[in-house]
Length: 259
Image (cartoon, rainbow, N blue to C red; front, side):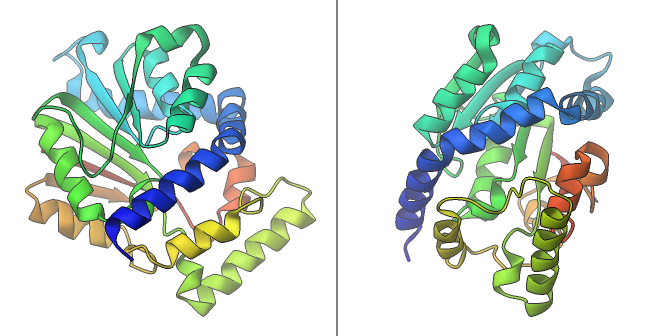
C-alpha cells in the first residue's frame, strides 16, 4: 500500500474517531494525568531553557495534537503553543476542549511528514502516540528536526502499539491486559467501534513489530540529533492507575533529543 493511501486511511479513521478520542482527552484533563503531565513536561523543558528564555518566548510545536490535551497543558504552563494535526475533526475537538484558552493556541492542519513551517521555527517539538501511526516515520523525524531550532529539544512519547499483530507472546500479554481491565471493572481503551479498522491499517505500517525505542535512537542519530536519551517506561510517571492496567503490555517510552 502506498504512503498516500495510508495517510488517507489514517485521516479518515481519526476523523471518525475524533469524538470518542476526545472523551479520552477530557478524562485526562479531569484526572490525575493533568497534573502529572504538567509537572513532568514543565520540568523537562525547564532543564533546557531555565534562565535562558521566559516561558512565553519558548515556542512549542505539538505534532499530532489530536483533541488537544498536551497543547492545553503547555498553554496553561505559559508556553507559546502550536497544535498541529492532519485531522480537521481532531482540531475541532481540540478547540472545544481548550475553551477560552483556544485563543492562546495556534491550531494548524499539518502533515507530520511534510510540515509547512520554516526551518528552525520552534524551541521544542513534542509528539505523543504518533510515530507508530506514520507511513514514513523517518521522514517525519527529519521534518521535526528541520523545524527545530539549533540546540532545541525534541520530546517523543510512544509505545510498541500493535506489536501483538507480529508476536504471539505479545498477543497473549495484550489479551491478558484486556482480561485484567474487565476483571477490575475499568473502561477498556483498546475496545470500541472501528478498532478493527486500525488493526488493518497497522498491518501496513512500517513500525508495527519493530523494536522501539532502539529504532528511534538509530534514526535520530543518523539524522544528526545529539544527546538522544530514552526512558523505557515513562508511563509509570505520567499514567493513571487505569492507564497502567490498560497498557501494561505496551509501556509508554520517552525519547529526548537535542538538535
